[in-house]
Amino acid sequence: MARYILVVEDDPDIRELLHFSLTRDGRTVVEAESAEDAQILLKRDLPELIIVDWMLPGMSGVKLAKSLRKDERTSKIPIIMLTARSEEADKLRSFEAGIDDYVTKPFSPKELIARIKALLRRTSAPEDDSLVFAGIRLELASHKAFVNEDRVAMGPTEFKLLVFFMRNPDRVFDRSQLVDEVWGRSVVVEERTVDVHILRLRKVLKPWGRDHVIETVRGVGYRLAS
Amino acid sequence: MARYILVVEDDPDIRELLHFSLTRDGRTVVEAESAEDAQILLKRDLPELIIVDWMLPGMSGVKLAKSLRKDERTSKIPIIMLTARSEEADKLRSFEAGIDDYVTKPFSPKELIARIKALLRRTSAPEDDSLVFAGIRLELASHKAFVNEDRVAMGPTEFKLLVFFMRNPDRVFDRSQLVDEVWGRSVVVEERTVDVHILRLRKVLKPWGRDHVIETVRGVGYRLAS
DNA sequence: AGACCGTCATAAAAAATTCATAAAAATGAC
DNA sequence: GTCATTTTTATGAATTTTTTATGACGGTCT
Image (cartoon, rainbow over all chains, first blue to last red; front, side, top):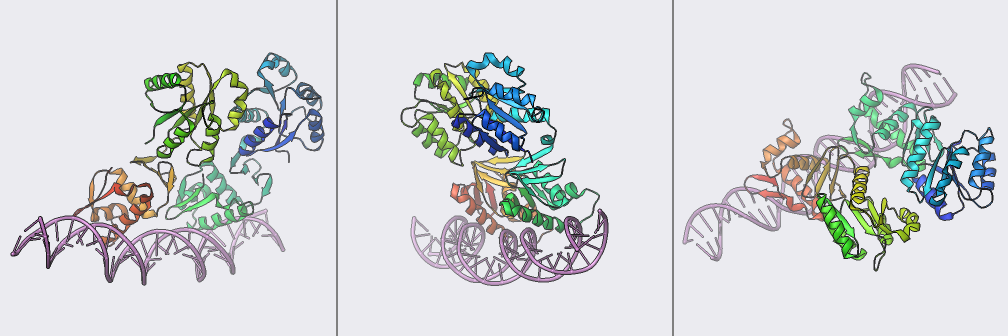
C-alpha cells in the first residue's frame, strides 16, 4: 500500500526535521540521501508524494525530477522541491522540470504540511477523504482503518462510531446523541448498545495501545481524547 | 485570565519599542530580560504568546523555547523568535525548537503585530462554550474543568454544582435551591448532602488555592465569590 | 459457517447519600 | 468581655445506589 512520503535530502538535520514533523502529522516517511538511493527505493514501492532537495550530491534534484516525469510509473506522483533562497531565481526551471510546488529553505513545518495537503488534495483523491487522529487513519472511501500503516479490522458500526468521534474530537456525547448520529434518528436501539460497541472499538484498537483514545465520561457519555 | 504577551529580550531599547507598540495595539505586555526571569514569571501565570530574542545572556532563546515545549503546561503557547539577520541561517534550528514564527531584526512594529495576530488566530482554540471565573474554566462541550491550564478532575455532581455556581456568581443559594437546580426538582435528597458535595468541590480545587471561591454564608447557604 | 448485531445478565467500578462526630460560629446569661 | 449553650457547618467513613464494563447468547444477513 503506497501511503508514504519519500524525502530525498542529503542534509541529515533537514531530513530529521521533515521526518519529525511529517510523522507527527500522521504520515509515514521514507528517506533517501541521494537521487540514486531514491531511484532504488522507487523500484519497489511508489510513494504518494516526493519531496526533493534541489541540490544533491551526485544527481541533482532537478535531474531526478525530470527522470521521474519521463517514467510512466512515476510520472503522476506529485513532487515538492526544496530550494535555498539563493536558488530562487531557478524556480522557473524547476517548474519546467515538472515540479508541482516548491518550498524555500528555511521553511516552517507547518507551511510544508499545508502545502502537502493542498497538493494531495489537488492531485489524488484518496487522501482527500481520510481522517487522521493520534496515528489512527480512516479511509472513508474504502472504509478501511489504519493505525500507522497497519490495517485494523473492525465492524461497520465501530467504523461509523469512530468516524463520528474523529470528526468531533474532544467533545462529550451522550448515548442518545451517539445513537442519533451513528445509528440514525429513526433506528431504535437500546442506549446500552452503545456501551457494547464502544467496548468492541476499544478492543480492536488495543493491540496498538490506542484503546484509551475513547474516554468514558461518567454520568454523561463518551469522548475522543484530545 | 492570562491575556498578556511575554517579551523576553535583553536589549532595553527593543523592549521599550515592543512595549510601546504592543500596548498601543491594546495588549498587555510583561517583560523579562533573561530566559531565567521568564521562567520564573511563567510559574505564576501563562501568557497567550511569547516573544523571545534569539540571543540572550545566559540561557539562549532557543534553549528557552525548547524547554517550554517540553513542559506540558507551556507546550502550546505560541512563540515568536526575534533574530538578527546574521542569524538567519539558523532559522531552521529555531523551527526545530518548536518556534511558530520568527521576525528578523530590524523589524517594523506593524509587521510584528500582523504576525502576532495571524499566529493567535491560528492557534487559539475556538472557545466553544466555556465558563470562566477566577482562573477556573469549564469547557462544557468536552466536560472538562481547568484551573489556568491544568486539568482538574472531579465527579459529575461536583461538576454540575460548579457549572451552576459559575453561571450565577456572587449570589447566595440555600441548600434547597441548590438541590432543585443541581439535582433536579424531582430528586429527593437530604439537604445536608449539599454540604458533602461542597466539601468535595473545595477539596479538588484546593491544590490551586481555589477552594475559597466557594464561600459559606452561615445560616443561609453558599456563594461563589472571588 | 462466519461476521456482525442487539440485548441481556452480571461483575466491577465509581460515585452518591447518609450518618456520626468534630469543629466552628452565634447567642445569651452573667 | 467571658463562658456555657445552642445552632450550624465541616469532615471522615460506612453503606447504598448508580453507572459502566464485560462476557455470553440468539438472531440475521451474506
